[in-house]
Image 1 (cartoon, rainbow, N blue to C red):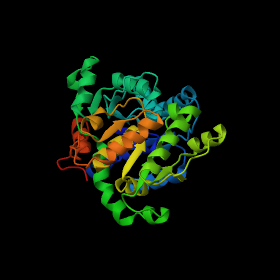
Image 2: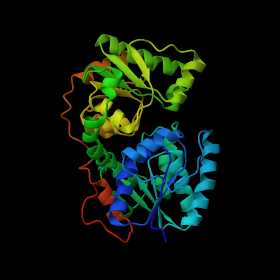
Image 3: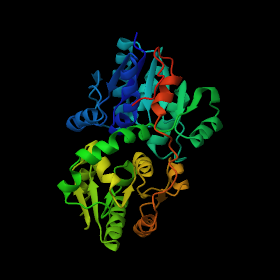
Image 4: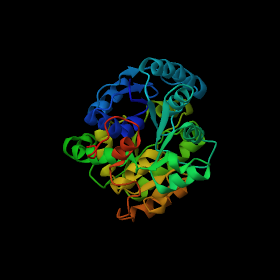
Length: 367
């Protein structure tokens, strides 16, 4: 019988589950990896698995994009059949995506137990689909792996037993510990884009509430451009095809000095992030990665489910207001990157595997 089934569907899930999957491979834990196809760039996903030294997924459902209900429903159908075939003891999901929700819901109505990696994150903004997903997954889970004590506190407040919760640190630290030196040696991103370290700003923007609203999208682009002009830096924006489509649909001209480039593979993105003067983002995961790498971050949102980053001084909320964005960038560029990393020591995957009911408990850290 299969011990663990990993359900994933987006690149952040691949990155953050990679240390746990690698631990299964190292310690002989019988497992399957199921890719829902929520992020459907096959070429980029293949590169992510290769660069993270993972085998290809055992199953790819190929669901692709669509409205939330339709997408989640298609995933539920495929995941349920896969779990029937594989009969795992525990289904492992990560984060707050529709893939994670589908995996947790399907398993909760079947025999397997549910393990949630990165449990307990809260923005307290129920207008975000991800917030609904987080809460539902946590309350369906049997094993809750909280990255920080604050996440554990939120779970306990919601009535979840401390017996079910393990504070592990965040697996993104494990992943970055493994990949950052490789990126420095092997990535050619700086040369390819004609960039000098510490002389550019990196930007990401993809969230539905930002790029699907033409006014908010224009505002965050204007704010990023204003920050670039004030500090005489180019703003590099690896843009997802969906966000590029919104630019065309809304007739938005990208203002200089913002330069849109193609989406980057993991090695190249880590290299760009680790050598940027600062990052402007609406991504939760990039808030964490910037914090771990010592790169100042400005989050172009009204709230964050990663408050630890703001508490240690690594991150500042700016909303999408251009004045606030440019002011926050100025303030964060004065940060020295010497804040304490709140996300652990890079052994989260080992703690997760030790807490799960698997036959081969790792005596050594996963590497």
